[in-house]
Length: 117
Image 1 (cartoon, helix red, strand yellow):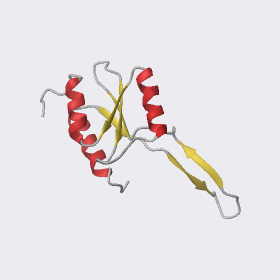
Image 2 (cartoon, rainbow, N blue to C red):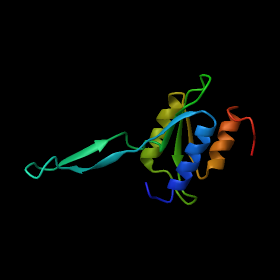
Image 3 (cartoon, rainbow, N blue to C red):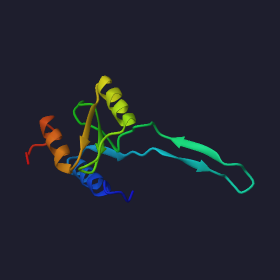
């Protein structure tokens, strides 16, 4: 990690963990790979373009949640907006979070947190 979004991601994942929500960090990886010095390089992509930073399974049949973490001045890319549309069309939940408070408010609105901030 190492970006300005890293502390926000950690706080969001801590919030999900404290509330017993199964979650994971997601990442799209891409770049050139060379198995050994005698081989040519291959371009490798792993993951879906625009994939959100955090995925979660919401309890009590509430479906899935995808969190795109941004620093306060950050904006979604076109690929991220396209991924958001797919998630929502599929009946999932998607949120862009600028702090863990955004996620807490969203979970409260879904009835998954008992204490409001």
